Image 1 (spheres, helix red, strand yellow):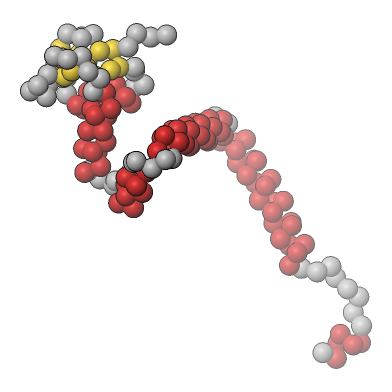
Image 2 (spheres, rainbow, N blue to C red; image 1 turned 180 degrees about the vertical axis):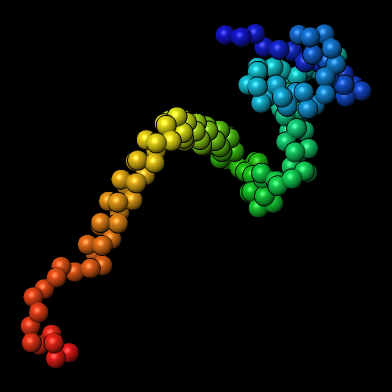
Length: 156
């Protein structure tokens, strides 16, 4: 298992990455999250864990720009869970739901990669065969089988 990277936060709000012995920005901390690197943000003086507050800061800054992920309604609903008897369960539920979504997204990407990995000719051939089957099925549904002509049909 990889070692946890320690980032120290100083009173002047600067972040110091102990692994690279350099100050980093909040955007660089976000990149650590995107790169799935394990880290903790610690108060430089007390050693208190500030990771959650830094992650919330990153979310807050990204919510201000572009299309927000959290709607006002969603944020209001989350706030209502604080102090509720189900507060502990809600965090676990959200975490599992998000993980299920991520798993489905990865599965979809994998399926798309396998489809796109085919040669254009085989993809076109598969598509043509499926379209032909759909066309035959539609034709059978719309066009009834030919019936022998009778004089009653001719009078109509």
